[in-house]
Length: 259
Image 1 (tube, rainbow, N blue to C red):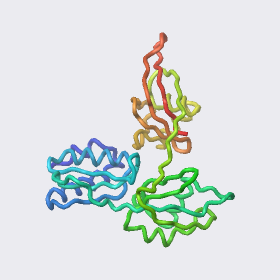
Image 2 (image 1 turned 180 degrees about the vertical axis):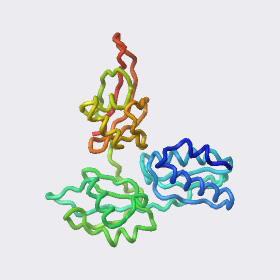
Image 3 (image 1 turned 90 degrees about the horizontal axis):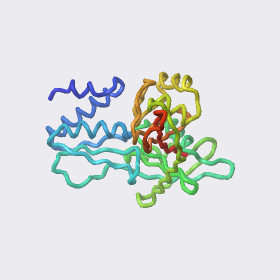
Image 4 (image 1 turned 90 degrees about the vertical axis):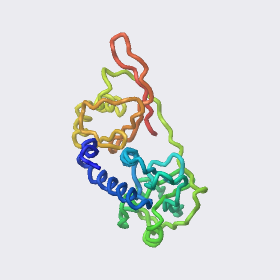
């Protein structure tokens, strides 16, 4: 199979991942034995799906621990596989929060990276008012249990839990509605986060912005309904609806900004 045409569809920084996925697919196709990936983000999941779909004899399964998981592991398997194997997920609940220290997503992420854990070895971090949980690859679970003893300046304990005890946070949106001359990404982002277009353009060119988990560095990139947009240090929003145009030709859009 010629792979140049596949690589041409992806950004330069994505090509090492694309090449790795192609290698996985080739190995599964030849050996008829499934291969399990590390955790992937939603953009990488799309890449794997596209490449697997180019093989007539392959299929894939995704599991992040719960239905709406963003990050998960993938099993690339021969097409005759009908049921998912264990994708190697382990679940922890974190204890140690107190009135002087409230554990945040950023705190947990930083603590995991500080113990030397690579990002592809853990999945979603689930933070609610009542529970703090994380999902890791089963092969590093013992290491995490031994090494993750502190988050911030607070001592913590980890307790293994089952999938049934996961408590994903409810995603809440602030609904915004406004008009724009076009769906250029710099224009929409400036409206949502109430920043100047010139400042937004700097951040975009500096690779601080992602659309559907893929870096976009072109200020005139055109957004579409359904796109998820994130700007570093500002947050994320989703284009919910394009609701016609005004008499002056401006586009009316509805956006859901994640709170």
